[in-house]
Image (cartoon, rainbow, N blue to C red; front, top):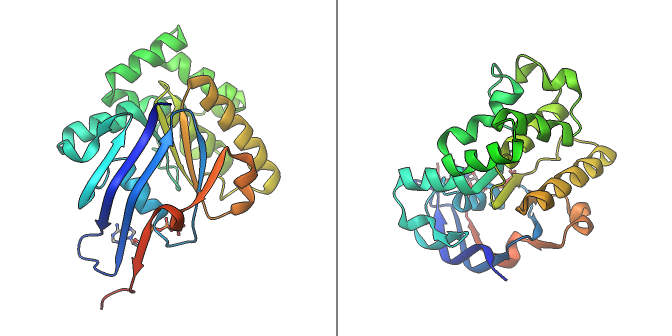
Length: 238
Ligand SMILES: Nc1ncnc2c1ncn2[C@@H]1O[C@H](COP(=O)(O)OP(=O)(O)OP(=O)(O)O)[C@@H](O)[C@H]1O
């Protein structure tokens, strides 16, 4: 089966922080997988996601997304590959509070012409129609969809906007960093149902990060960061 993600002989340290290091000898994720990545707080999950997204470059090794080695690209091309191929749901959602839900969702398409074309084709009436279709599929009420500013919405509603923004234009890979941490157990379950349905419809591989191993049975596979990575932690230098 094709691989959505392949890490080979990867090592990374935060610049100026000798105390924390992460290395991943080899990790492959099959296209279409629904994977939960578990690890305690501070173990390096977000650090690993930043390497997968190409936000940070490994000091060594290869991070291939959908067959492209991100580390071999300069920062402009890396940004382009990220925009085209990776949808990201950040822990804090990172919405623009003064922009409308639709403008927030369409934002990644500005930097990703191929993704824009896919969104326009899927939405028939254009990318904004596709944004609306996604919001409806994610069970946002009409008044939230039509809100003038995303900052007016509840946390759960903002979370759905963040998911729609990650899904628009069907990127091959969706990375979600603790997207359910603000929800109670019942809402978590309903949210995962919606996320899985939308990923399946778009043919998108899902890697979701959490410290909550009770979510594991919902996924095709759950792995612990420690099982794929060696983590060095020696505290903070003064
Ligand atoms: N921008 C940064 N600069 C320097 N060090 C950082 C930076 N971001 C994270 N770290 C360090 O990297 C280590 C791992 O943090 P990371 O956020 O990756 O863990 P995590 O498993 O995602 O934690 P949490 O579940 O609490 O979000 C920590 O020691 C943290 O201080």
